[in-house]
Amino acid sequence: MVAPPAWNRSSEPFAELISADAIAARVAEIGAQITAEYAPLARSADVVVIGVLKGSVIFLADLVRQIAAPIFVDFIGISSYGDATVSSGVVQITQDLSRPIEGKHVIVVEDIVDTGHTVHYLMENLATRRPASIKLCSLLHKPERAERKVEIHYLGFTIPNKFVVGYGLDIAQQFRNLPFIGYVQGP
Figure 1 (tube, rainbow, N blue to C red):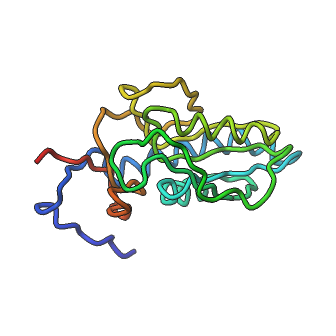
Figure 2 (tube, rainbow, N blue to C red):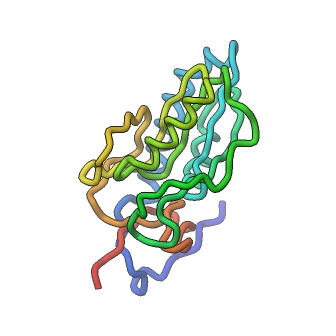
């Protein structure tokens, strides 16, 4: 197995918050939990795992490989940040699903839930499409920033109120490819 590239840690503007090994272990646990709950359901109805673009892509790729049940994968693009580090508060669907989800069991995979506004909007929007069930899986949750209550059925990590990057999360579309989750350090 080839080792991932080493990052020059001294010049990075962030510090490690959650290691790549800790992420891999937690993703495996969540995958096992989803398998236990959805493998029986997959016999009677389709299970669709929806990745929220772009931040969830790396998490989604690792997670679906840990789910030992038949699933479909789809994507939806939604944004309230643009290139900023603070949410604009305006939610925008940038790419819709490729297929209907009516009558299907849906698991929405998100990178992070902070204020809750974006994911609340998304879950309400998807619920109007009449899925058989809908649950939220989020890699990260910042409860200190919560302004809207959102039920997270599968949660990777609860984190402090820091701006985080890596493992799919970005700063102005950069640093998604870090193998760990880091936080932006002060000036």
